[in-house]
Image 1 (cartoon, one colour):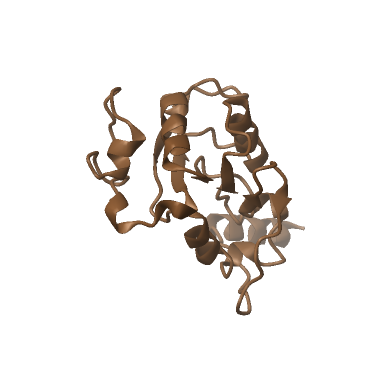
Image 2 (cartoon, rainbow, N blue to C red):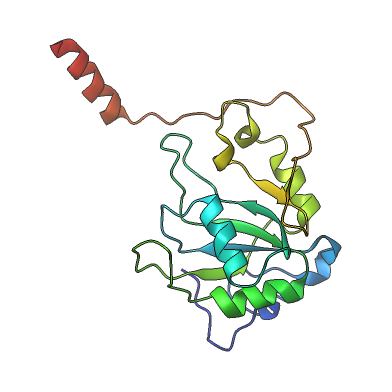
Length: 187
């Protein structure tokens, strides 16, 4: 994964002074919509609610307005990373200082959190990125969807899609299929 020196700061990342894949330039970004960070290296069973709790426990209540923990559509299990839009670059910088290298998970894990700058940056950009995404389809359970939050911590409805949503494609494992077919044949 990407290497960050201990003296590194999210502002360095934002200014493109650090290594890819998190190097982005603030010059080309409108930061009025906040700054989106990625939290990587999380335990695979860390849910959206657990990430929200983690942020609040570290003093970020009301400081983030978008949260998404991508999950497998097949298993429903998180992939071990999250996207969080902080209301300001300064708050994003604080997350870097408090959570980069974090290991104090609420579940048994030796994983180490890596904080970086997300490719999709800002509240509006994230809304546009996900509002017409298959993850917002009615067949997808709520816990797998991105959420929007007010500064009061209350959840706000995600803006409706602007076109018909496609259901997510489920990836079928050929071993799984042949095993279940064989089991059916035995019955």
